[in-house]
Length: 512
Image (cartoon, rainbow, N blue to C red):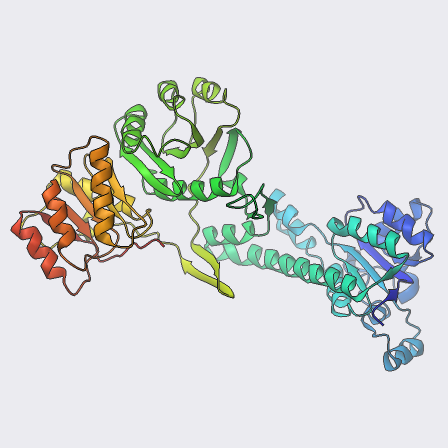
């Protein structure tokens, strides 16, 4: 039968909050309650009849409470199917049926977040509770399982509306959640033992963060639901502003990615729009870096995400305050700068604690998920191969490395034009590399930049020499690209013909 009557319940919970209404409803429905230890005492304090599990098993709680419910008379009553053979065995061994199991596990994740005492952590690994959950969920055709206090309201509603009965769909829904709770609990325990012990701390932090979720106002668009799984507090202290949206989080992730390239550099600012850096610059002071970054594309900067690798001082804050932006990220803010920027209540100020770039990336597609290692490789001067007759000057090498860091964080196909550690123009998300270059040149010229003596970076190789020809005509004197085309020689020859230097990295930085 799909509809089942709940005649008995086993209640064994760590947290008793909001349990009382359920107990009263169980009593009103005449449901027999079995319980253990602290939960049993709590039920008795409510003047509600309860049978101790010890009476059922004839064994006391032993080993300091480590063994209470692990007994055939408990698990037999939960796992027994309501059919003739199993019923006969229950009668033979005097085992009562248990129709409802209510469990709230020991708070393992909360414990590891608040203490490093290994003995205390180990004692918060629930054994009996997790076993009860799995047993009841396995037998969902006959048994209802409530696996966390977050389901108490749902259970109470069901008890009241269905007067002590449940449908198969109800039991299966609760069982599905139970296996989710069980799975997450086991993963949290594994991560605790596995992560730090292997020294793979970033990945361990990443895995643990997946157990924490926050519902967002919506996804990319208002008709799409959105959630964030992770622990933002580990990376940021929010100083001001509204709740972060789905799109904010995507842009912030891109901002952290590019600034991770410059976290140890001189003062650097980046301005992002729709995950792409439309302005980036490194300068002797924060204020100069801000002005140079903004100059890269002051139009796209409107409503953008701003990030700096140094403290924001008052002079810089006064300039930033002239612009409408969504989020400003920095490692610190002077007191007067924070006070000024906080006057606009909706603007978000984030104090970044650490530039955490996850070691892996995931994307759902088709009927599954793809995974890859994050692109964490950054080129150094010593790793570059000059393939032309002309060698870049020291200043050109510096600009080439700067441009290469920028191009890595823009959507493909992408080209970056830079000079004096400033992004002058970029073309991104184009279906051809020539289009990306033309877009970059147009943007640079529209904002008043001369490209004489500038450099060009490409995220992938040039299949033809046309990009080099167009770039040199615009004033470009040095090029950085991964190489690897069967027509690399054609691009090299074009550089040599026009006295342009070219270095190859051997590493492609596609970003789809």
